[in-house]
Length: 161
Image (cartoon, rainbow, N blue to C red; front, side, top):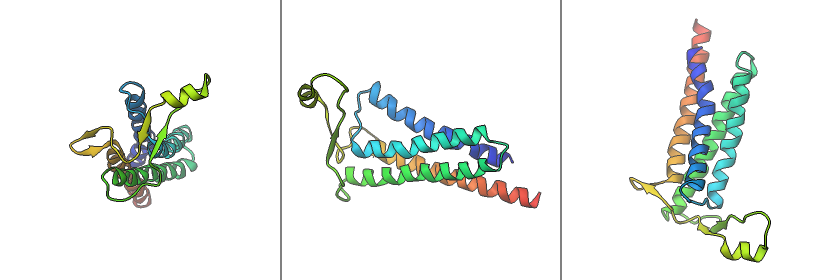
């Protein structure tokens, strides 16, 4: 039961922390996301709300199902991050080459002309040679595997205990 409780909290904390980091890097440090960066956020949002649902239903039989689905969503974001990292490192071609964030309202032409151009094939920031997409791959896939292992061990403990 303790292992399942850890998986429960990880299903909320992992996507919450990674989304928080992405939003801080964007709005505090000015690292605008490219299109593939945005693709990585959607599964994390889904996982976050699935984890929240699992916490709300923690004494319900559906909680475990929500945790597993959240882990799969986290892994999905990680796989998109792995693909994106490969594009950044030049290992393969990306699906798109750039994206931009247009502010709402105002003059559309001015918005287009002044919007930052963000390329998907250039890492705007790295640490130890690993880009943000690479870190998303490592943390998301590793975190999803940990959640699934904890759920499997927790289930085994319930069957034998």
